Length: 374
Image 1 (cartoon, rainbow, N blue to C red):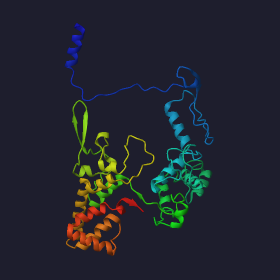
Image 2: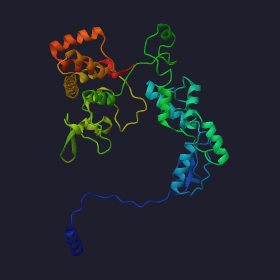
Image 3: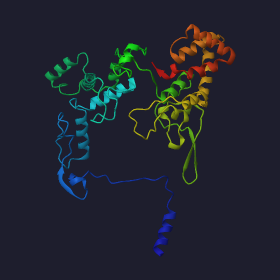
Image 4: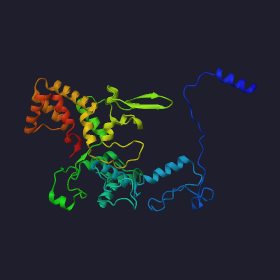
């Protein structure tokens, strides 16, 4: 008891510690053993780190000893995955990029390229895109490879443009397939109603995060600051544990791109939820897109949307001055990237005369043309 009392006195004399640290001792992984029938209590022979044996090229044998250091294992795995001969890595990645631009991948199950997944709608296209992505073949590449073979340089290495996501975006966006209009063709629709064969560009609603960012952009309120801590559109109270209360925060700090929004399960955005934004903690290879009254009501009545409509109207007025027609044309150009047609201009002028420019801006932010890619 006396010793305990001494320890208590010594501890009370120590200065307070700000925060806590979790410290561990890092150890190299022990050699892996095969488990008989998966039983951890029945280890069998030692096995070396390797890739999947079902993949023949590149070889699944990574040339590692069973006790190879962890860093060496990671490097070998990365090299195996990034080998241009690997049949999955490039295909999976280009399929995800295609999915991003078209709303559906060439394989419609981006997280499953196995037997239970979907079959590619255009298998040869998928193979060609994968080869372009992994090989980086562009104008002059063959000449560079030849020069590399002679000088011992680039030959056998990574060609210029290989594994470039930016280059793959450019390749897809400049294609005739992507640049098709969304015009309906009844004859084609009768043959391929789901547009699997890509006879037109399927209209699709952009993600909720993009809709929010676009509203901030057209209103002139978007804060383009990069990096740094997330913004937190909620307040926190503590009653034994933290409770988060969603709040429509106002200020430049809260007008950053949605990617910088701190996401709390109990403090979700009603507008983002209505626009099918998934929980960031849950793997979501393909988002669902629903059209519901809740989404329409959120876009009509949400205080954020109404505030951006007011800010947009102020911005148009500042640019157009007292010229009401010019303000209407600017609003259309800002929201849709085009001027209004004659009928739209006539209707918009009547609306502005009766309800003001803010109401027109609010209507434009709620329009399908603002939220859909055609």
